[in-house]
Image 1 (cartoon, rainbow, N blue to C red):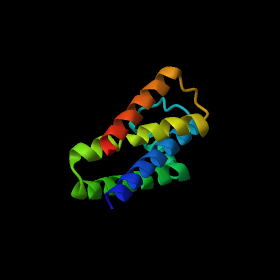
Image 2: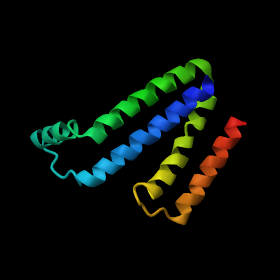
Image 3: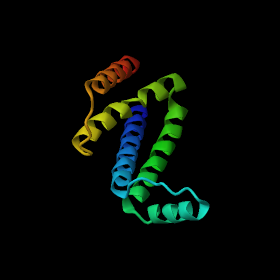
Image 4: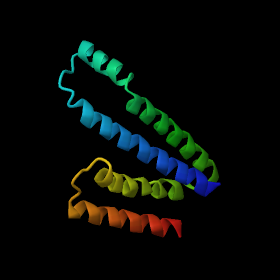
Length: 120
């Protein structure tokens, strides 16, 4: 079950962050930070399906992490959760069509190697 909760947490975190990024790219920059304007932006965001789904995935990730901590050591759970960085980088390239510089790919490979060391 430890592996199932770890996979659930990583997949839900990845889905949440990709959805947030995708929707923010569609929405554009928030440049008015007055309280009334921020309230309007928040209200509009809470009516957007990708943001609602993102919040749901984030909640799933949080509760999966809590359950994972019941079963595994913190020294395993937190480093293993970095696997989401690897998936997010790949999906940023494939889905969001972001340019990922070779240095980021190298960093992602190092994170993947570190996660592999933790999981063995």
